[in-house]
Length: 288
Image 1 (cartoon, rainbow, N blue to C red):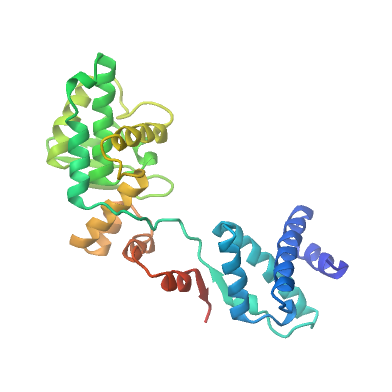
Image 2 (cartoon, rainbow, N blue to C red):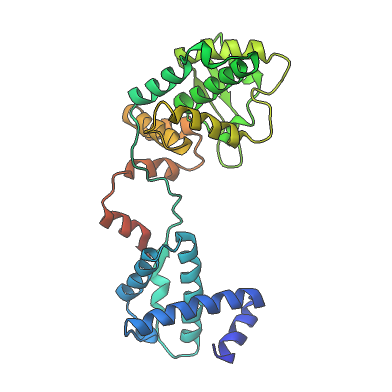
């Protein structure tokens, strides 16, 4: 990189470490341009998208590609200021920060109910000791909350016994940093399991005591997969539940039920079956 570019970035307040990272990204970009016989300073918008697509084909994570493009934008801003080029074509590119919500194997409401029922009705001989029986009761309750209320492990960690109202058949899901609070109906199939579990854990104010609730969920999923191998993970369950809700409720209702802070979080569940072309248009969204 030229001394002028370094001075430009230092004036902008970039640290030495940031500059080193940017240099690495720009070097990668220029290496691709050389290999493709593209002049970096006269690159077109389509060619820039081809560079991004090549990075994806190399298995580069979307978050890393975003950082690469940001570094290249800075370089092109410098070229514009230096009057080497007239326009920063890279500034037209905005890559959305995808959250990997698109899943294969979405489960229907009937499939989810069968998964819950089959796990809840495992024969008693599978739980030889009192401790293993108690753990199974807890795990059945956790699975029910995944299947019927689409809770996350972070929300499980905040649940208290007082949040469960068996008389009214409702449960209050407290807010987290990523989700809003909401009150949801309990499914009839959950009530007996919850009642039994609450009796066995009546000294604890928390519904699920422990530090790593994500581990609890992982244990439940691992056990369920032994009888339903089509299940992949808890994220698949939550996505399936939300998609099923969208079939019978309006999007604002589903936003509330899912605890989404933004309606956009709910809207993306409508695009699970996008074609590859549509996915690319979503990923490479030009401004203006």
